[in-house]
Image 1 (cartoon, one colour):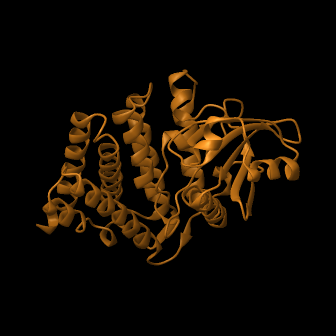
Image 2: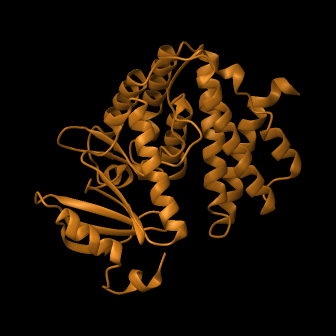
Length: 313
């Protein structure tokens, strides 16, 4: 991100261009989450609050373009009901941008503020979108689970480079099952389905997902993503209501599993796959700031790898 625009009130050319093209006003910078892009709150032409995300250098432009690719791919799969309404995408020589409605508090903030019905609204939405994107497509779910495993291996290699695991753990990650956990049906699959990226509107319970990663495929199974979410909410963030809602998460996974034609054993192992990835990620990002917690999370991830690969040993 360019420090020039981050620390003063000068608006980069891409932002002034969006102002003119889309008649937005009251453009004010803010920070949120882990992003290299510039973020601005604004008032849209219809008077509603909006958010503008702009990429102006190579890294941040790639991030914005990856988000756009994700939004378009999710919508194409039938999962558009999870996405913000009225988004506008654009690219110019001096940058790329996404203009969307302001969604208020994310799931983390809403849970800590005591918003009622969050978990039930989320899990109903997951069940609905799994059904809306369901298709009979041989090998599509397996390909999605292979992509999920690829992410586990990627982060284990990063953990190895930081001295958190040995080479044997990286090798073991490559043995995680994928084909054996899949059926011949598939639905939407997401790799960054986290409480930070989810919003639940208190007025109508609409669940909205933002900032998707670029994925090789968006088809597979939502069960590992659901398990990642549950792991973050209960074990990492300790959100109010999360521990008490774990049975609801399991019931939702069972419901999605039935849609996909999975056995109970396959559902439970897909849940372990999600927990394995999330604990690896949560451990990695804390290596420099909280090494003790990082080691604990990596240890938990390794335990799940051991469970999932025990039949291979």
